[in-house]
Image 1: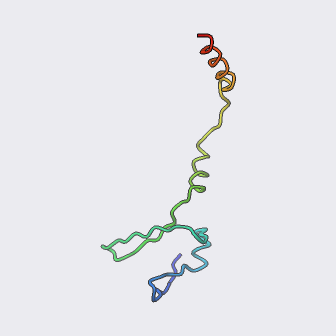
Image 2 (image 1 turned 90 degrees about the vertical axis):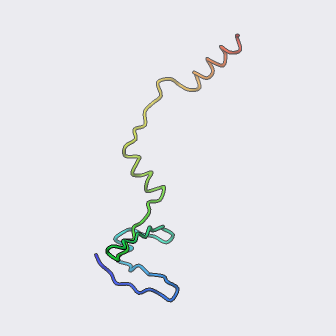
Length: 84
């Protein structure tokens, strides 16, 4: 997808709605701008927020049941320390 935008007097760009929709951008999202001086081009890419990163990482994480109950372990060792 390509789009033509105009630079405002304040140096601002408005991303067209089609671009925002395609990239699922919302107000407040952060974007990274990279400049390639050899090509005289800029690249604008969204920076993933913590919720997005969390969702991506969670697919690699498996929640397992603990081998022992933490409360039972704590009580048992706490009683051992008092006996000493």
